[in-house]
Amino acid sequence: MKLANPKGISAGFAILEPLASVPELVKVGEQWAVPEFITGIHAHSEWEFHLQLDGECVWSGRDLGHAYQMNAFNLIGLAPGLKHRMGSFRSRQHFFFTGIDLYSVFKRYPMLQSFWAGRQVVFILGAEEVVAPFQNLVYEVFQEHSLRSIGLRMAVDALILRITRLLTQKEPKKILTHWHPAVVHAKHQLENRPSVQWTIHKLAKQCGLSPTHLSKQFLKNVGVSPHHYHLICRVKRAKELLRQTNSPITSIALELGFSSSQHFAEVFHRLTGTSARGYRCKCRVSDSE
Image (cartoon, rainbow, N blue to C red; front, side, top):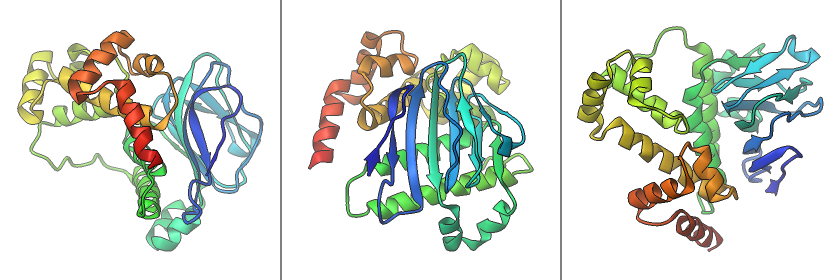
């Protein structure tokens, strides 16, 4: 496993060849880039996937046909050999990325290959559904136990399955739950966009309900208020960043939308029973054993 971060990356990580027994996973990472971050023209020998989490950037290159504007939760995937570059001109960026040999995945699941036949560029708007599989892939990369190779391979397969479903999705998904559809949508927004400053009015507008009605339905279905659930989602994401990155705790707090590091510390301790620093130290001790 090799760590690599190019110039212009302010935080995060990039891991090359995470595990020899899972060669189809060529690289994976989560990074924050400074404004005006630009890569040189390059290509890869495997499929490359990039999920924008925050900020804006543009992917361009003669092989791509035209430029692709990447906003929050847009996903782009490029076939092997396509020359391209990525550039940001105004905003700080936050994104997931991975390089995967799809042909190894197709050997396990031949049915998937037909959905990818002839594709060179995959571009999906509003790919929030891919956040959780990406987070799980990153989580498995950092696990040290006898089942690590199984976990990584399953995480790779889950990510490609989710992307494939989005490529073939023609009808709105049926929600298989007794919850109110607006609550499902609100919960999805809070889980996948925890850094957004969600007020009940802003969330209600997204869901098409009045703030009062959404609050009542959310409490009835989920058991806690939207505000409390938002804090739970932020702390969950903070725990992942504390374990997986070396970002300063203050930076993590501000990245997740907390008003101050003190506010973050109070919420983190209230929901976990420990401090953020204590949690990070405990994780590192556990990983080294």
